[in-house]
Length: 421
Image (tube, rainbow, N blue to C red):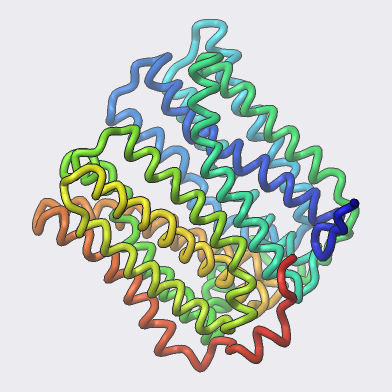
């Protein structure tokens, strides 16, 4: 018997973009895994040099985001998506080429990391707006859920695939295979037929400051979006403590092995996949308001399991796996609904600039939170600092509770959302 495809599964252009998103997401995670391995195995980089590589992957993209927001609003997004994929592929191919000639150096890796990091940010900004051109308002929640599902799959498979490719082909050749994933993504996007709508007026000046002001203004002007922004600052700042402390706490304080920790982290991808699958149904049943607040409260409660985990490996694993599966699942439910709400409430002609404001804020808060977490751990101890993870998510929920009248309720969600299929 043939299985009838319904909803977005019958939407040719969306399926092409969705497939490209998946391929690109896996490629980005393989890059994130393979570049440090290339630095270690081919060049012998130390911890400080690996830290600089991580900065090269993230910081330039954050700095470029505000430049790109206005451009994304005023120009066609599909050519930018294709261009960023092809540029990432070309940049990554530099590594195996120079490695074959015995000329691979850290400055080359830094340059490639910076180029790929910038292109990844540009791809994400353009994709955030482009998807609103492809699907109707009623299908946005479903589309964002499916997009988060491929991100979850990429998080599960990408790092493991990167490690396998490095072990099988060596790091430089693994990066060459990774470059092919971006070419595949570009070809898929090239097959999209839908004509884009350019709603923003042409720029009267080339001032990046004006675009930045517009992005901040439209985010701050809408009460619901302003509340989402403040909630994001709270959970991003405190959630970034994980980057500095989670691995150290699990290995040193909980006595886990690297393999056990890796398995627990991988379970987070499974939780995110489940969260993406139920995000639309949660909003349809309980409304956007209750779904957003409830998802943050569940995440906050699950974060408490981390500092409460005892130094007994099998019990600690139970605590961490529960946190990863349930906590990451709840957070994915939140992110799918938050993204959809922003896309609906913000002016279509300023979506790119608003997304750039979001990207810059998270890009700056993440390293700041990691540094603050490290300092607090030195001052008050590891477990008390990790308790602040829950405080951050709880504070984010409190922001939305205070602003609850600005958020859509059950009736609004049911009248505007189609149940995902």
